[in-house]
Structures are given as C-alpha cells and as structure tokens.
Image (cartoon, rainbow, N blue to C red; front, side, top):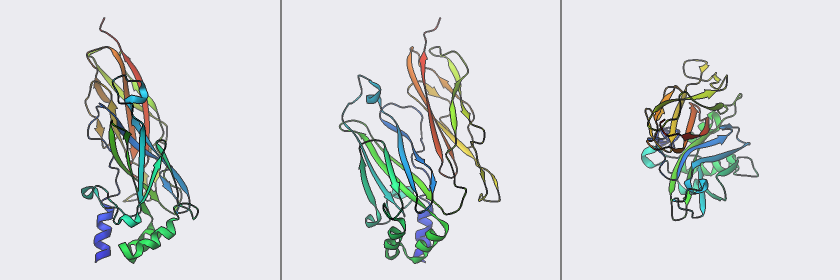
Length: 275
C-alpha cells in the first residue's frame, strides 16, 4: 500500500512547472527549460538548458548586473506540485552548479549511474516503485534555481523521461514567429508561430491508440499586452497590443508536446511611432 500511495504522488509530479501563468517579462525570468533530447535510454546523456530573459545580458542600463548563477538538482522520484516537486528523500538528490545555463546529465555508469541510483532508492521508495521504473521507465525531475547575485531569481522545474523503447520523443521544430501587421505603437498585431512539417509526431503509445501529439503554446513579451499568453490546446495565433511608445520589443514563443518535448523561438521587434 505504501508503494502504491507513493507512486500516485510521484505521478502528480511529472509535468513541467515552468509553464507560465502570465506572459509579461518584467525582469529576470526563465522562459523554459529545454532538454536535448527530451527522452533518453537509461545509459544515455541529455542536456538541459535554461532559456531565460535576462535584461542584464541585453545591455539594459536599468538591469541588475550581478554575476549570474545556475544551481541544479536532479531526483529520480519527486513529489508533486503541492510539495513544490521536492525529492522524496534528500539522499536521492544530486546537486550541481554550472557556470552557464546548461547542465549535462549522463545516466551511464561513468556519470549519474541510473541503475545504481535506483538500487539506492529501494529502501526509501519500495521495491514496487523501483521495479516499475526499471520496467516502464521514469521521469527524472530537474530543478533549477537561477538568476543574478543581488538581482532577479527564478525557480524552474521540468522532467526528463527515461525509456527503453524506440522511437523516442524529439522536441517540436519551430521555425520562427510571424507578425501580420505594421508595428505601430498602440496598435494590435497578430503573432503566429511557424512550425516545421511533422512538428507534432505520431505517438504509438498514446492513450487510445496511435495518434499525433497534442501541442500547446505559451507567449511572452517584454511590453504591451497579450490576448492569450497560454494556449493549452494548440499553437493558434495570439494578439499583442503594442506599447504606446515606440522602441525595441522582444517576443518569445514556447511550444510543447505532451511527452516533455519543448522548443523556444524569439523575435526582436521595433515598434514605430504613429504616422
């Protein structure tokens, strides 16, 4: 019973926690954590990169310019959102600090050694949970605390799926952001993401049988107001009310699939004064 109850808690923690609640970027913020690739075998490697909006790196004179930092932690069995995706036991958590926004996770015997890691977890989470992870795969929870010393700070969470079967999931390919109207201060413009053909892959293990993945999207802007920052059902267009003053503007689009894949594209815009 203990193993079943724990498994239910773990399942609640297998979604991305960096999915945004609003789209206006007012300071340092991690737009997304992206894994390359998002699914790996138990002896493979992946890289997780924080895609962040960092005003200090963009030569913003009003931004805090303290030293950047990136502190990562990885856990094979984490609790859900109500527990802030904390590791089931601190003894199972691996922490790393990186000089830049990317951490490399090597699951093989010369790295994190996933099989030995899971064996150490048996007395903590129970044999049933570990056996299920070895048989069916598991989601590694990757947490990041990042920012600049004396300035902005962000906490981000995502999962990396560890599976044995092939083919494995890939990140959706997003080609760019289209803008359909002149960029005049105070006007309303449509923003649309351009996806590569096949960005949504066929998923043989989908509930109910093989089908294409469902994609979701999130938009961010450094100014103005978005009509729909998040679209959980697709990658349709959104509308941006431009700022009342001319000047530079950045917009970001995050596209996710339902298996942990994600891609981020950015576009730098110049808002002009009304004629």
